[in-house]
Amino acid sequence: MRRRPAAVPQQTGGPASVPWERMHPTTGTTRHPLTVTRGYRTDLPFPAAQVWDWHTRPGAVVRLTPGLSRMRVTAQADSLRDGTTVFDLPAGLRWEARHDPAGYSGGHRFTDVCVSSPLRELTRWRHEHLVEPGTGASADPSSDQSRGTSAVTDRITARVPALLLDRIAAYRGRQLTDDLTHLAAFRDEDATPLTVAVTGASGLVGTRLVALLGTAGHTVIPLSRHDAPGVRRWDPSSPDPGLLEGVDAVVHLAGAPIFGRFNRSHMDAVRDSRVGPTRRLAAVAASCGVRTFVSASAVGFYGARRPEPVEEDAPQGTGFLADVVADWEADCAVAADAGLRVVNIRTGLVLAGGSPLLSLLAASSRVGGGRLGAGTQHFPWIGVDDLADIYHRAVVDPQLHGPVNAVAPEDITEAEFADVLADLQKLRVPLHIPVPGPAPRLLLGKTGATELALADQHARPGVLDGLGHPYRAGTVRELLLHELLLREPVTGPASGTGSVTSAIR
Image (cartoon, rainbow, N blue to C red):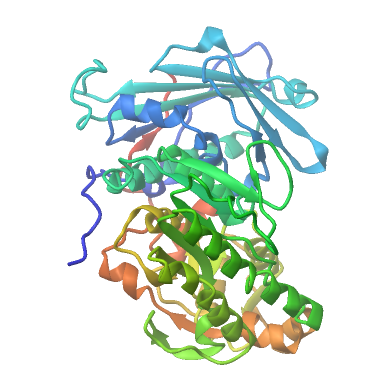
């Protein structure tokens, strides 16, 4: 019998449910007329000690950084008291956030200050993080920590536009709530810390997953083709037989980008970076005592013309990508034959703020672009953090094995997606001009247009639905609001309450 995730404390409404019109951050008095102090409070159905502990774990800062910000974490503070986190920004800029010992109180408060020029002088950034027991909760860390509530207050003093701070704070509040909720659901599965090797750890999905695994208490070893501190060097054509010694689970994400013009060199790169390297890595896993092998896959397995709903037991479709995916998954057989639990994550279209796919679609929408072709083709989307959750579950939950469709529960067409995206971006001239079929062929080639831009893949998450798997974003509208730091258009008086308020304490 399939077991559902453990029950978690009920929430009274997450940050996403808070109308923007009800967020009124307080502006404080400062010594410079352009510098303001704004505070944001997130109420959480988790004890303060648990929330504080989460902030101390590797990956926490990555989990709270919006992808749309284009800020890439290159070094994480090893101490909330006096460590330093480093971000790389576009145009060669660098943001160093140094923790201030004077603003630190263990279990309660930590403070970071921007110390790198020229951003230090431009922003005068100071961010105080307060973690406090909620109303009626015990402040004694020795008390029963399985119950209780807490509040996190972000107090930011900076020369930064207020609207930008508001949107970043909304993202952080929602992200923190969702991460803690997800980890609570899999607390039992995470009870035994694992050592997890990950290929593609620096990619879009890998970055989010490595951080999630870190906050779950696991040790992550990136596998890379290049030498770097903290990684194991992996040669896809001839991996070292001892590459995976001491590893409990492998997550294999690496592969050449599928998006691109489908000429012969591109198609060879798509295939050769997956078929062959996966088999060799699986063989090493089988010989090193690894227990779980999780490999990326794709809904391209079902072919480009599958308008009928298809779950994991549907047969393979036809076309270049269907053949590649089938051979890619077959490469994992050597691990399955050796007794490893093998999971193939058949991924849909991954939507993430700042990602090439969503950036391209959003840019097209902003200039009046609408549906692709007829727009009747199904749009099997998945949010990047929901995908990271699925990979995390695949690592720790023995109920998952074989192919798993990683797509959202919402069943929409490409035209419906385009309409939602245009509406949320509040286009002044909502032209919704259809993108004609020949346009994708010019960019992607005939095969690429057929199998990517105009593909109709009606994949449904049968396995995950059967397990009662919870999703962060049940609708693409909810996902876009979060990932693009957007606000819901106002159609009437604000109503309702939520768990995020604004206050200066």
